[in-house]
Amino acid sequence: MVKTVTRLLLIAATLFSIGVSAAPQRTSAVVAGSKAAKLDACVEPTSLMRRRHFELIKHQRDITVHQGIRKTKYSLSGCVDCHVAKDSHGKYIPVNGVNPETGEKQFCAGCHEYAGVELPCFSCHSTVPTGK
Ligand code: HEC
Ligand code: HEC
Ligand code: HEC
Image (cartoon, protein in one colour):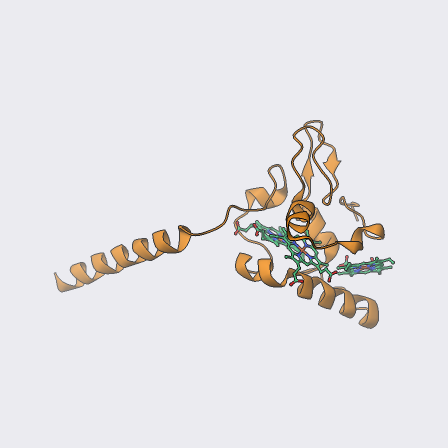
């Protein structure tokens, strides 16, 4: 009996904490029609990605370019592959562009424009999956 009550209390406490922590969450920047839209998690927890994604990719670039190590976990092409969306004809929309059909800013663009942060990477790097 005591065990059952304890268990019920634990469940109630868990449900309560889920409700509380979910309440103040921002709406997601993830774009409909991307692989990411069908998944629950990024390569690291979302709060960490929001705060530190640039450190992760820059670090990845340093080890790739300078040490020739090609881990794919934080690769820029990996970000693009999972966060890119397609238009209604199945054509990829550049990850730093705008959906011509809906006017929706794409994943890396919307938030960066909002935050006023330039994204100088895509003059060299592909904004759509290259299929490698
Ligand atoms: C395999 C798929 C996948 C890959 C690869 C991936 N992401 Fe994500 N990302 C997601 C998903 C899914 C979410 C949303 C998680 C959630 O709902 O909490 C997300 C969330 C984010 C967010 C937070 C968005 C918000 O709403 O505030 C940022 C920023 C982000 N990703 C950047 C990156 C960057 C940069 C890379 C490359 C280093 C990357 N992601 C690689 C799937 C991915
Ligand atoms: C002047 C061209 C140029 C610019 C601008 C540039 N890169 Fe790169 N980057 C390269 C080249 C060349 C490589 C090595 C080739 C490769 O590994 O694909 C590379 C490799 C990388 C890699 C490792 C490969 C991968 O896909 O993960 C990452 C990560 C990366 N760059 C991130 C960035 C980020 C973040 C920015 C913007 C802050 C940026 N790069 C801007 C040329 C550039
Ligand atoms: C939820 C909002 C958000 C999303 C989504 C987002 N970014 Fe960012 N990004 C930021 C903010 C804010 C900064 C500046 C943070 C700072 O300087 O403290 C930043 C900084 C960066 C930087 C460093 C820029 C520099 O010049 O030093 C890179 C590189 C970067 N983001 C890449 C990406 C890529 C690639 C994507 C898409 C895969 C992406 N970001 C998606 C908000 C976002």
